[in-house]
Length: 334
Length: 282
Image: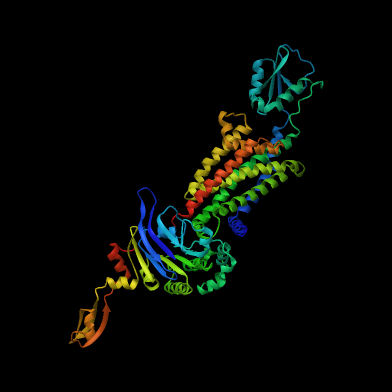
């Protein structure tokens, strides 16, 4: 069995190398790293500057307010200032001596950081200590977030397409049928491919984390990231394998891929990274996988065993479906 | 070697592809399975090679029912040449052969280079990718793949397809050599010429039924008119006359000045097929 698996694995490596898959993966790694270091972080640097804070205090009851706070003479003026502020300004209205925070951009839950900062400016004397919501600097927070997002996209999109492009080549060459009549456990054919993509994705995840989060921070979070990457990689590779067996050609696959990518990526990103809330998102399996990956990047790995049991069950189920589709493909006419 | 009794197979509820086939193939025999496209040839071969499951009736290979046979042992003992040369186009002939050979025990393997040499494969191309080969060269590599594990039972689907006449002669010689080593050969083909030259016995399959099964010689003889056409010159005129073969015992039963040619009216295997199946092979 090991000899057969080794042969399959070497052949798959050669197929992927001839399809320039490793080259594309390395190119993506380089591109993402350059983007994070010289594009994204620079871009976010501007937006990470201190937010404008507007105060409407009808009774003029507050003393010791920071000079960074801009005063509004009326509720209308406050609304106008916030509506015209594109940098994510924060409004404070004093009602009966108590501050009420008004956020025009982003939900309240999603932006405790801004609200806390704004409130701290009301106590310029230093009596107020903002609540610490995490140990990351804004830059590190952004590094972790964007690395997680790009890793997720890479595995969902590139890995999924990669396995399909290799398999469609084998389908076109007809060699899958030859495997039907050689003394080989047929599941090894699937196992070898999925294992190779898993290894590639794990290496990609490790390098992405090292290059973009930094070696000092990566050490503690890498094991959890690799676990989440493995779950996502296995699910995507098996889904790609199954689609390739069921669909006729790469054109049909591309259409199916658009639907899958749209279904997988869009609602997940919207729910996880913006204030848009979808009531059904808890039923979306990839939302949990994405959050698992994101939590791993922030050093809070998923500990709920139900999540891991569901992931293992999904992988076993997919393997079964793929095995059945593969056997059908082997028996198909030339 | 192969025993098939009342073999049936359906692709769907109302799509019965095989209707109660019965035949046997003896050890060391070259058996031809002939029929047009869609007649059930490939379905039968897929059942015999263990690719297709869910058949009715009994199929026994190497003395064991195919449903109960240990699949890995079975695949170790068979070799299959597909109708099309299925190879990894980015790998060379040698890489393809070494790859597929790696699934078999070492002791039953033949030397890949030696095998390709027997198949008159151009040495310059041994390490070049298959994508640069002609159809004939690919067919040679495919044949080498089927033979590399020294199979006891060889399934050949259109073995001479894509070969030039010299290549076809070479392949027939190789197949005959395999038989002499004791290999049983099951050939599926449209090519009546190959079948006639190669096969000890042939079965004609049409619409999922075996309509005739015998040696090519017997089939032709049974369907022969036993007549001979004689082309001759008599008093300066060229004439042609058909006579019954037994009448030749006493010599040419008419006067002539010079014989030009004598033609046997024995039908070809294709004529016989059309007589049984009611249609041609293409």
